[in-house]
Image (cartoon, rainbow, N blue to C red; front, side, top):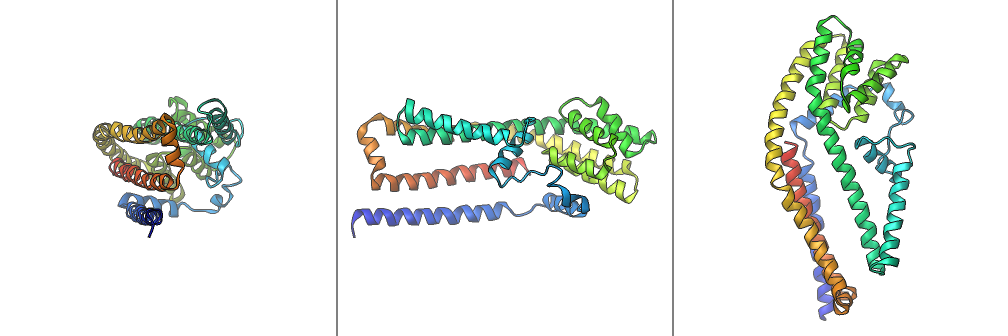
Length: 314
């Protein structure tokens, strides 16, 4: 059996092993925690006939190209003029990046693809970073929101009026979202529907949990203040724990980023360093090696990210 056939078989075996490993890790990492199971129970309780009209009310379908970028932009706190604006900007950026790589430098079709993929990855990473930063700011404002709600409820205000009163004094970005909800209540939008829209706009599990508790209390007619007291204690404990986890994760993330950047940079340097290296990577053996390295590289990043996310979301 020739060396080329052996190399192809080895690449297929490595690819199959990598695929099974990724599926196994994904299945293991998708095991629901008690917190996630409780969240799912809350979502199931809150299902109503109003949610069947969410697509008409601006529900974003993230399975489409336009919906994917729109959801990222909304989570990052951006306010696009139209639903297609984020995806249109991403498409134009990809075309420009490909043209620069293909026509300007390094004047190679592979360089065009590298530039195009790179601009997509960087754009998505920036939006995710901004969304994460915004979520942290929102969650830092959550104790202030709960304290304001409890103070207004203890002053014998109704939940809707308490929310409107807190929204007037709450700083951005949470204040902006609450003021949008207040304006919806002023035009006679039902409270549970306004809360559902608030939960859709805010990418924070803690705030979604608070919204669910308020909706359940309003629907059942129970006293909301004791529930807010329990939520306040949970939020305080989670905040202290997250601060400790953030300190631990801060020392790991730079290593992951260095590893993620170094290996592709090395391949790009080798590709353009000499014609012989370029010819090798375009040969059959070179493509097989590239597939194997890409699989192993993706698995390493996937496992590292899952480990960090598991600690961060504990």
